[in-house]
Length: 102
View 1 (tube, one colour):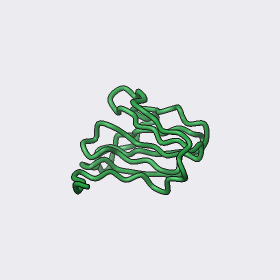
View 2 (view 1 turned 90 degrees about the horizontal axis):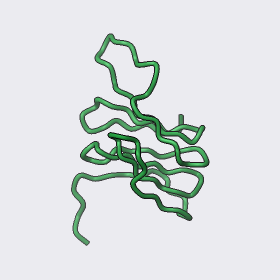
View 3 (view 1 turned 60 degrees about the vertical axis):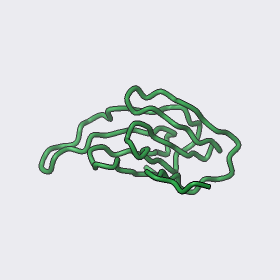
């Protein structure tokens, strides 16, 4: 695993992996065991994912990969919303609840 990100309320963990997948896991209450399988598995990148983050509202995930692409995924059904390609290396995607006007 190359990237980890919790959603805003800490109930889910997003993991970006060397196998080019991203997965969403429910964080169990203290003392409970982790599930054997993720709630959602994203597939779409062709190389490892080194950046992964939830949107501020927790409805989407953004992943960055060494395939020079950044993907925006919907958490509820694991569907790709949009993607970019031929991107210079993105070190770490970041989402802000409020962005200053430019």
